[in-house]
Length: 302
Image (cartoon, rainbow, N blue to C red; front, side, top):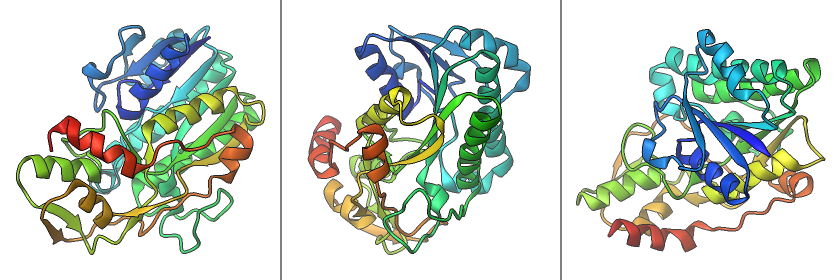
């Protein structure tokens, strides 16, 4: 089978590309390398450097998609605080890119698109664990943009006949997560600070909790969503471990002195109800963070 992965040089996308190639699929990657990295590229995949948020590239996009069996749409700018600081830039990259890829899929008769959504759509929910039919309450431009992508996927399934499914990821971690830059995850920030001999900076009281989900499990969920005959009508599915940890606990796993700094706008707690993923995709998480962190620290020399 031939698949196209947008954002396939990024943290999650590159892990998905590797899994697809391991399973002997032909893979084409579209990435503008704004946050993706050349060193993440798999030599067995074909790469196109293209900004899919720019409509002037629409014909090139369709040429790339022509003849593909499915599309995994992961291309996005992924951080909450940065979207608050620069909402227009994030709107262009996270919203227009999704509309363009959906329309290109419809024009090229691509059978199915699997969309990378976000648990940030739930906002500061009180009811936990979060279920897909719970009310959404995005509290940042990024969360709003990712939720809009779900709505667009459902609409395109209904109006244009392209099969779609949206996967709401919960706090992804794992191999190739970046230690540097604005998109570094809290675990990576802690690891970089530990390597530099600095105290670990905890925002607020550190009791905010996250449902950490390993990137390999996320990649497997994408594969299952592409092939399941139980989805394709714009369904939204949580992909999370259904178990969470506090930021303070993550700091303890990395080790070292800590210092508390000002909080930022973010949900207080995330926790997935993953029963829909189990019933519709046959997906189960296989990696827990306590088992993974020791290897991560050893690889970094911490």
